[in-house]
Length: 245
Image (cartoon, rainbow, N blue to C red; front, side, top):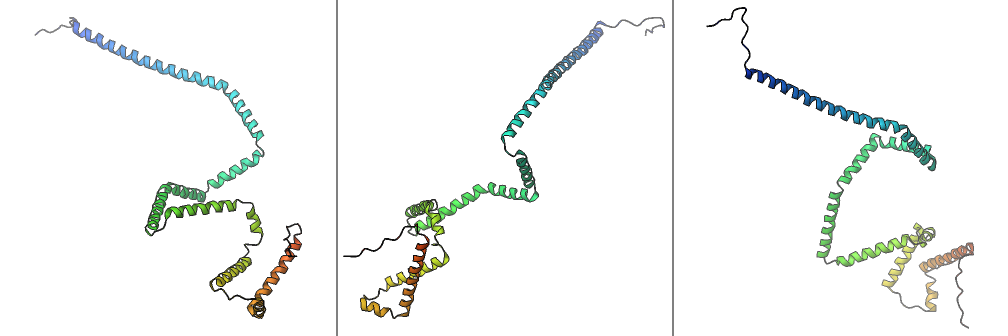
């Protein structure tokens, strides 16, 4: 076995070991170069963004001034801007109340269930129509009658005569009660027609208390109607009856 003396140098490294060291060094240099390139790309991107922000910052005062002028011009065309802003603030405060939010939530829940409710109502309507058809009801005639009634009702409420009817007293409770009694009397006489009466029969009927009460009522109506006509002289007067010559 050969041992080196203290003054003897170590043998030179082999060529393969040197090549491995060079390869490792090149790998490190390549990795550092790639990392440097990535860092430079990131720095360039940051620089571009800062340049765009700097350009926007340069135009910001002009943009703010333009927006302020547009707002002032718009506010000048709106009357009572301060009052409307106060009302909007009050409305926002009301909308943010817990009870209001709870009510809005309940309304939204109803809207969410609206398709199911409409479907259920449609099913009920279809079932009702089917039962009516099975019982012999002409559904098509019924629908046409309802359509006609709705059309006439719309014409009634949109006609100019409706306010005059409401102000005329025809819908007063006492007037309706009187008209109802007259209608019942007419229906009863039609169901049980009396015997024909001449002049003497009419004179004899005047002695009946019910006839006297009715006649007094008619005379009172005639007197009151004449007073109404006197209070409205501009209204159309009733034509006088023609006399046979």
